[in-house]
Length: 294
Ligand SMILES: Cc1cc2nc3c(=O)[nH]c(=O)nc-3n(C[C@H](O)[C@H](O)[C@H](O)COP(=O)(O)OP(=O)(O)OC[C@H]3O[C@@H](n4cnc5c(N)ncnc54)[C@H](O)[C@@H]3O)c2cc1C
Image (tube, rainbow, N blue to C red; front, side, top):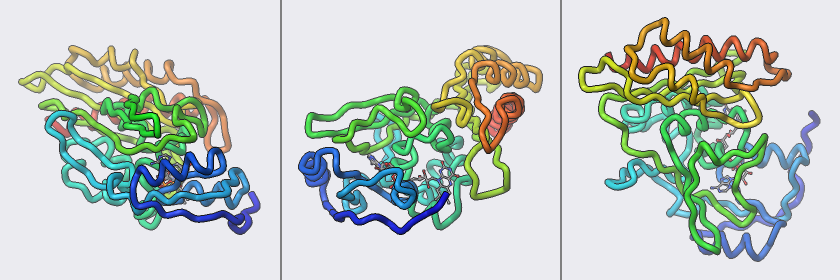
C-alpha cells in the first residue's frame, strides 16, 4: 500500500466535551474526532478517510483517568493510553485479561499514544482490548447532543471498522463491573512474529470460583480476529460451569469455542489454522486463569 502525506484538514482542540460535541454538530459529517491518531492518521495517509476537520480529544480532562467507582466498578476514560493500562497495578491485579492484552499490543511508542477508546472505536475484528473487555462484562458510555447511552462492549461492534457509534457521538468511558471474589483471567494472542503485529487469533478468558476455589461458578470467553467482529463463545463457557477445571475440561472448552467461531482466510492466516489455534489458545487461557488463582 502506497502511503502518501497527510491530506489538508483544519485542526480543532476543544477543552471540554460540550465544545467537542458542538464542533461535531457544526461540521456535520465533515469532521472526525481522534485521540492518539495511531489508526486515524494512517487511514488518512492511505486516503481511506478524508475528514475536512479533525477534532482532537486530547485536551478534554473528562475523558482521562482510571477511577474506582463504588457503584459501577472501574471507570476507564476513553483517552487512557495503552501504556497507562500497562503500568496500572490495579488493572494488573483485578482485570488481568485486559492487562495481558496491552502487553502484547504494538510497540512502546504506539502504546504511549494509542488509547483504549481509539482501539474500540476503530472496531477492527483484531482489536486486542475487545475480547478481554467482553469477557469482563464491560460497557461503554457514549455521549451526543441528545444525551448519554450505555452499550455492552459485546454489542458495540457491527462489522470490520464498524460499530454502533454514530458520527455525532463520542465514546467517553469504559465501565468494568467489580471483579468477583476468587476470580482471574487471561488473554492469549497469536501473532506471526513476537511483537508489533495484529492478532491472528486472540482469546480472553475470565473465571470465578466458589469459596473453596474448586468449582467454576462463572466463565466468560471472548474471541478476536475470528470473524467480522470480536465474539463471545457462550457454548464454550457452559462447558466450564460447575466443573473442576483441568486439562480435559479446558480442551473441551477449546474445541467448542473453535466450533462457535467463523474465521476467514486472510493474508495473516487460513481459516483452518485459525480454528485450530482457537482450540489451543482457549485451553491455554483457561488453564492460565485457573493457575493464577490456585
Ligand atoms: C505500528 C502499529 C501497531 C499496532 N498494533 C496494534 C496491536 O497490536 N493491537 C491492536 O489492537 N491495535 C494495534 N494498532 C492499532 C492502534 O494503535 C490501536 O487501535 C490504538 O489503540 C488506537 O488508538 P488511538 O487513540 O490512536 O485511535 P485514533 O487513531 O485516535 O482513533 C481511531 C478511530 O477511533 C475514533 N475515536 C477515537 N477515540 C474516540 C472516542 N473517544 N470517541 C469516538 N471516536 C473515537 C477516531 O475517529 C478513529 O476513527 C497498531 C497501530 C500501529 C500504527
